[in-house]
Length: 250
Ligand SMILES: NC(=O)c1ccc[n+]([C@@H]2O[C@H](COP(=O)([O-])OP(=O)(O)OC[C@H]3O[C@@H](n4cnc5c(N)ncnc54)[C@H](OP(=O)(O)O)[C@@H]3O)[C@@H](O)[C@H]2O)c1
Image (cartoon, rainbow, N blue to C red):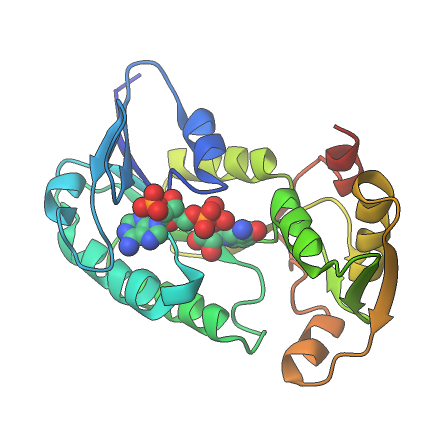
């Protein structure tokens, strides 16, 4: 097999370590971009400023772009991806896979608008891209629920529907896509089952915080109505296998 030069952005995040593991293949060169750039396979680069990006991207044939900053998304995700596009080695790049989120085109939230704008940057770039929209990772759902709990009460928005996914399932899928030819398309990837947020919260509470009492609360507004209408659910595409219940049981 011909060795491939791979670069992963966002390798230090929630998804990154699973992604690096799923992409690993003997003989390839796999580098991990982060702002600090420390560690054996690490390379330094800052999407918010553009510092060190051209050197980091030099020679990369496959890029899996998973870096993001929800608190600074227009600078890091949108403008940062523009900088990434300007820094890639067009003569070498075979495939750039962008990790987006299911519903960025349908859920009116500022972070999602920035992710959608980032997709547009890539689709207009002329680069060989594939965009994969993924649903929420199980571990991220745990973090959100732990933050939402107020003492013995766990308030959750009434009627929201989600389809969370195992981070390793998502990483394996993304690695598979990265090894294929670019499609120029947007594909969805989600977990095996749709769940109401209230049911998800009850499962989490039973496993992690048995004293917590889930209270479904009506949540007004367009964002809430989109989530009730299923805007966070994947349309078509493949599914991960591991359920949220399996994740909690592990
Ligand atoms: N979390 C979810 O449930 C979920 C679901 C679907 C899709 N996604 C998408 O999947 C991707 C990964 O999500 P995640 O939850 O793993 O993210 P995360 O844990 O928040 O990690 C963000 C990553 O982005 C990097 N980063 C932030 N600012 C940067 C900058 N200025 N320059 C370079 N790198 C920067 C961070 O690296 P350093 O801080 O080390 O530099 C870190 O590795 C994101 O695009 C996200 O939108 C997430």
